[in-house]
Length: 554
RNA sequence: GGUCCUAUGGUCAAGCGGCUAAGACGCAACCCUCUCAAGGUUGAAUCGCGGGUUCGAUUCCCGCUAGGAUCACCA
Image 1 (cartoon, rainbow, N blue to C red):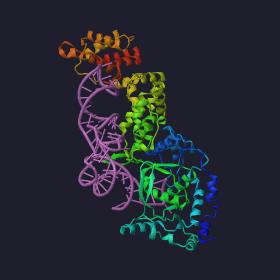
Image 2: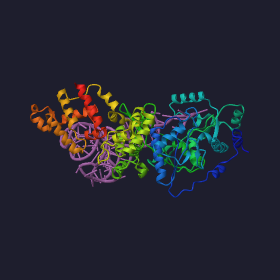
Image 3: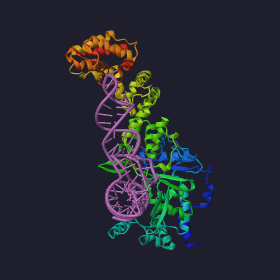
Image 4: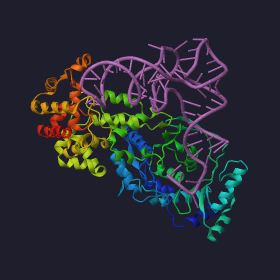
């Protein structure tokens, strides 16, 4: 046995399997021609990030549209940053946005033939590959301490050379197998590094599905592939996993482009065919006039929980994200009149190459459209579900009567151009609470915003007349005509024009009368049309309110 | 700083050698109107700069500039 094999044996005595064994265990997938295998590979380090949702959406569309599969792999090799429970949370948040996974880590279990799907459970697989690399002198143990590495970086910076563990600076790569063996036997801690054969002066062309050919220098850094805790680093784990899991297209953020040479080099060293890569543009945020990557720490909208908490319908969020991914999506929604991304044909070629600024106005627009198109019944049930966890004050109102709540939501809804009051479920409460008597009293307890031009007696007089003469049986148009008549009897001009031509003849105009009614009924100057409100409130409640105002003004 | 990516209105963008340079969001005005939310009409606003190539460049090439990403025993 040669020295490298002995070294490999010394380091991994427990590993008996070979790469060939693994190949047999994870045979190629049988999928139809053109079907793509993609993956979503988050780290369990917190809430789902908006950028991750974007990436997941693209991965899903690429897989689904081609009749392939999307699987989820949990990249939990960084035990220090791991937040327990966040893996499950990721899955459930993904599901809220309509991204369901058909293979891989599903929170409480794994599904699929290519697992385990948690990297922490794949240690033996990585070790099989690393054992092979060491035995071929393609990887080696490194005994440098953090202090030594820091010192190296400092001298490199001082000398203005490219920092990193490479070439002559990679001292442990020159250790003979015997020297390494001796250090290991002496109990020195170590990591395993990949022995790079690259030259950073040599450029290679790498094809990216979105960007085309990218011209990058080869990697020459001896990166760490196995940390001292026995788990691999991302670069290595990704290569091994996507090989054995037979991923065909890797969709990930563009921040990975710079480490692409590393990944390609590892694939090549193992004689494996690299998958295709699609590096997605990042979602950005404007701060002080500069764009920057959306940051989970600084930007509330960076975590998808923001949308969930405020009550943006998931469909609207996905529609917005899709409009960033494929700009023709917007055009498609106008024709199809739906905002369902599952029915849209996504195209990687149409991706923009530049990072898009997150635009809350645009999300608001999509969200209003989506909510306006829901039936009152659906909106009622979705918003109730949301209120259950996020808005106790709204839930209280809904629970008094689902029917009543639904009636309110139905105002000016079933028509060609429905109202668009709500961009999110969180907007509902303030728009509907005046419909509830106790809330109305609260709202009306202060000064009512009547036009100062109108005398209190005029208001009382009109309200009294209205109570006596209003006809609840009329339809909207006829009702308003009758309102005009009532107003006219009380000295209001029938039209604004008429009023303007001779103001001293009138106490006000119909608009004023309508405003009196509106304020008295809703405690606000703005509301949906009066007739609808009266229909929902009913005569008894309406009269109570008007009476309340009459007395209040007395 | 090295390397890579990117560059059309405030934002998202269409455009792929010849166009009055689409469209959407936002903004403004007007119309409609019982207010609001809508809806309708109109409008302001864009090819980063400098060189080439070409009869002709937003479009192709080269510089520059700007912005972004990345340079960990993090992913």
